[in-house]
Amino acid sequence: MTNELTTNLDFSVDYKKSEIKINNQEQLETTVQNYAKKYEGLIFTEDDIQEGKDVRAELNKVAAAIDDKRKAVKKEFNEPYLAFESNVKRIIGMIKEVSDPIDSGIKELEEKQKKEKAALINEKINELTKEAGLESAMIETSSTWLNKTVSFKKITENIVSQIDAIKKEEERKQGEISIVTNFCEALHIDSEGWLKGLERGETAAQIITEIQAAEKRKKEREEQRKKEEEARIARELEQEQLRAKREEEARLAAERAELEKANEQQETYLEDDVLTEENYTEDPFVDVPEPIEEEPVVPVKEEEPVRTAIIEITGTNEQFKLANAYMVSLGIQIKAHKD
Image (cartoon, rainbow, N blue to C red; front, side, top):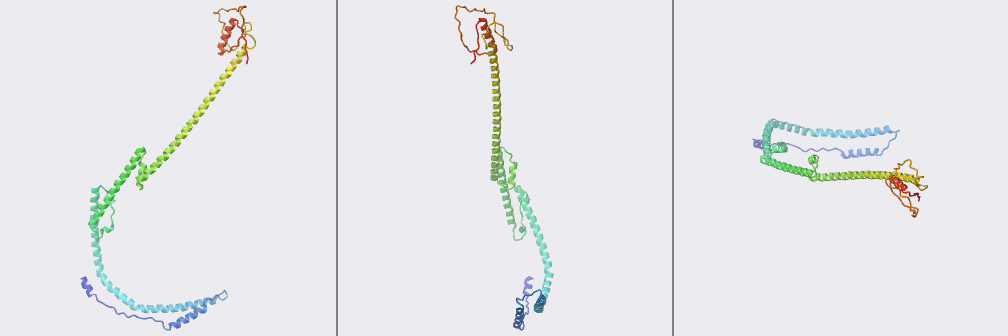
């Protein structure tokens, strides 16, 4: 049918080229040029501005007259073409009255075929993803798959290729997760926060570098804290030692003061003369024991020579009292000496 229509479609169009010519064109151009030169470079002032407006109106009037003639010629020139164009469109309309319903039927049939193909594609996607343990939504489809030029075999190969790529990516992600998790476990830190970096698109190597940097900063802070704590303890120990030293010095000073006081009392006690039973005066602040009566008093024999010796005695006040009482009981004369 189509070949028959094309074969019988033989028509021609009678068309004569026409010429549009301006009579006296040279004279018109010369007149316009002379008129334009007359006012070229003309400058108007406030006094003759009206004359300038009149000149402008005259020039515009000439230009409008020429253009109006152009429009009239164009309209007359286009009339045969517009009539031809109208006839052609009318004939094409006759064809479209028949072709449009055919076109609609073809489009409906093609749409039906696309829906059937789309259903088969979805069925294949569900089948292959289920076997791979994946979600069907993970497969990216293309509108070009519905074209007749794309075979179902090619579509299936594309789906299988996507599944392989998804599985490899899942394996890679699991490997990345294992690397980060094991690294965190080795350092005894929580991996949950670091694993979020994988979700943001970071690699395990990048995350491990970040962990190492964070642990380094943590260690440096801990070492700094430890140094500060040791310095604090050292300061406290130094202060405690200084306090203890001051307390010991105060205690020793108190003991020296007490000893000096006792020595002063002892010196006062023995100071002026020989101690005898007649001139011995008891220290009102010191308890003097009773003379020892168990040992007999040995009188000094007149024929024995008398000796004088300077001796240094070290002892407590109680010991001094006993020694003094013993020497008095023997009749030994005692006299204190000062350096």
